Length: 175
Image (tube, rainbow, N blue to C red; front, side, top):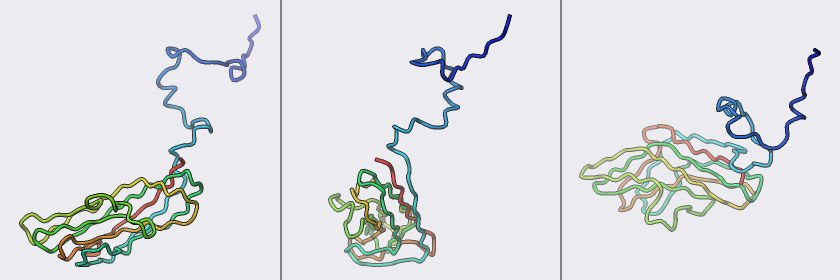
């Protein structure tokens, strides 16, 4: 009896019944079909700043930490992440940290900001600045995302505390 080779790649069409595919085979999948493009990270841009900024303004001021990104399509989204440390020096005060897209506060309609440090009966409070925001800029022009801070009642607030690094990262996500 002669052996025959079957060209399985061109022989199989249609759907394979669920019970005939081992879970281990699914783990070997390394790419999805090209038609599934949403949610893919297209580019990542990051900036780090380690010069301490301080202010006692009750208006938002720049922390001098920003990142520029140019989306490749108006349907794409931008995920912004910020990681750093902050401090305030006034009993009972609150420091507010937020993200601006160019000159627009992305949290302007909220009660406060994205990340807050509050003192409770102490004269100083330090903590993490942690912000994650998914923006839909609908633009293909260069956009600047910046970290801003303010004091609620005039106490001194700080970012990049004692020379620690504050990082801002922009991820372009296919829409």
